[in-house]
Amino acid sequence: MALTKLNNNGIAGVTALPSSIALGDMVLVSSATASSSASLSFTLGDYKEYQFYFVNIHPSGNNVDLTMNFSIDSGSNYNVSKITTFAQAYHNEAGNDTALEYNASHDMVGTGFAIIAKGMGNDNDQTIAGSMKLFNPSSDTFVKHFIINNSNYSHNDYHNNFLIAGYANTTSAVDRIQFKMSSGNIDAGTILMYGIN
Image 1 (cartoon, helix red, strand yellow):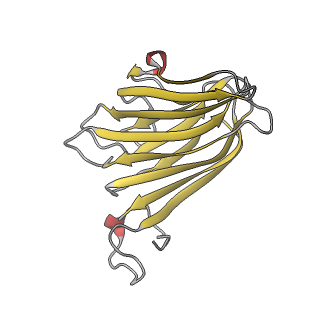
Image 2: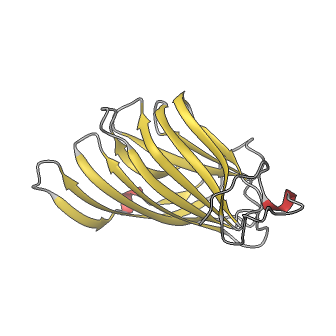
């Protein structure tokens, strides 16, 4: 699959596709690299699917969560109602504690920022990497589903695989998404946003 970047935020603004772009191809729409950043925000367009990739996201604080929220008013407010479910597998560095579990305490029903990585540490070897799929955010008819899968080496020397799914409970078009830590800054790392033709 070829990766091609367009200079606009959505396929709706393109008058002709280059011959190298086909339906179903991933197009790099935007990327953001943190440097002691309070948050990283992205503008969404008309793609039916967006894929976000988290690359070595590292917090400034210790035992903090990576969170996200949506906006329907161009980023004036990040307060869209969400319903999520949170499952995790973990294994500690000592090799004596493992589990695969549904974690209801990290689920969300509400307008706050949803947890997408729990208990992140600020040691140099403690980062997360993973992905998020967001479906049809520009719809003004249906809710907006998302699926998140990430790998996290946490503050207490556990490796975690977090599986989060849910939806933005709005029929309004979602036009922005923001990622931030529950406390402190995003010290380093990159988030890539791809649109699927």
